[in-house]
Image (cartoon, rainbow, N blue to C red; front, side, top):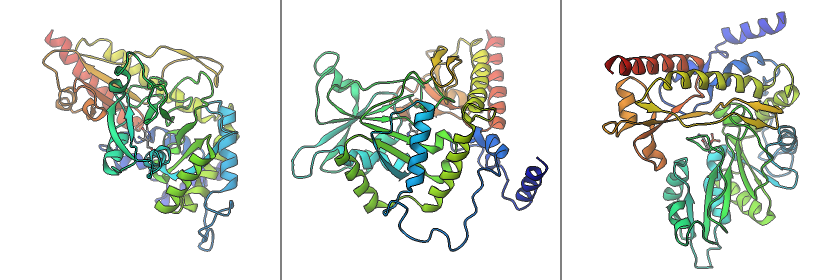
Length: 390
Ligand code: PMP
């Protein structure tokens, strides 16, 4: 312990232990800084030193650009957590799962010679990057086609659509609900960025054909820009690989090395005293409990309802611990909920971003404890003011 304290002291003096949380209090809404204290406790075990002559080649241990050892770790992690069936899938690394959004749509779209165009859809409220990327990269093979409801409506509740690529975020960003594809026959991309036990119960391992994960929300290392896809079909995986080859020639090997240290630390502590998911769940459920208690006194704003659920990872019924609060303004005149809260000095992201009504807005709960404490103070003042006026 003395050695650990000394290492931390030296790192802090060298400016290497300055908590990132202080650097950006206001903007990056989805920044997962709540895990910073966990990594401060594991500073040594997760540290990586890279000499100048290390890892200089384009090539990694698979002969291309992916570390074989890192792939092994990812499979072990999914097996141990029980959140995805990875053993029969191809793994493709990317620069954040952000890079995989367009890469997967490209890979699942019809061949450019076929003359048909895939329609890319998601269910409102959805993560806005699906729309913004597909609109930006607009191509002959695929186009953004909006909300799934339009496709499901075509023939009653569901319809068969082969040329539909559907993004399914489960649990969802922004409202934390678990989702399944709604357009029957579509190629579904299951974005499981938040499908880890600190954010949600794990009912069973996901076994979809195409699944998307990111370390940003698993370990909190958004800075490393590391994501991966699990893909059943070899041809689809090859097309994703081709895209990554053309686009970035693979993920930075520095990042892969850091990820190895991070994942190994996570694996070594699963189900022990220092389990990252137990830590993360505890932090997040405490935040949710405090926020819910304050908001339950209000008639002006409300939160999404998430019941406690049985989780296979913890083997018990667990309290809700969502990454985001999806706030609704209940009063007729509060039609721009984000603006209403901004006037109370609370920064949120309007539901308009998610193609939902401006009556909704998203509060990020994954930021640092400091940020949350300030948020709770301001929400409490907001609710108190409402009650005093009543
Ligand atoms: N998918 C979802 C649902 C997300 O919320 C995010 C990050 N906010 C991402 C993908 C992208 O994550 P990253 O690029 O950091 O891996």
